[in-house]
Amino acid sequence: MSKHVFVVSEWLAKEGCEQVLWKQVKKLMALTSEKEKGCVRAHATRQIPHPGAPSKSKYTIILLQEYIDLKAFDIHCASDYVEKAFKDLVENKETGLVADWRCRLFSEAD
Image (cartoon, rainbow, N blue to C red):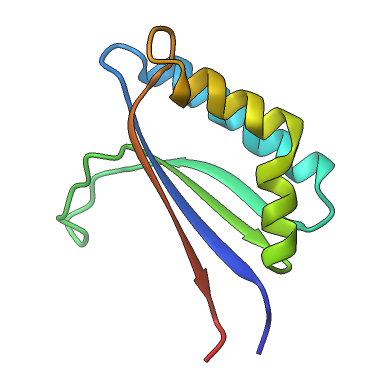
């Protein structure tokens, strides 16, 4: 069984900020893929409607990432560009773009 870690990070933009947030997280995922050898894949995605999936989440931007192990994810979280992005997008209550977010980790291990 693989030690890979799968990350689902869900984001809700503040009103009127979705397009700017979308551009920022796409850049962040591109940097992640480019700079982190422990990252298998990193994608910024948007929720789309489909009759076969009638549920709708309030989180409209979803980041999907896969890392070779938990240590690689920890390295991602500690990287300068991720820390800066989190401070700018989430923690800065005045200029941040994020109204709400959550992050969950998954594994194939038993």
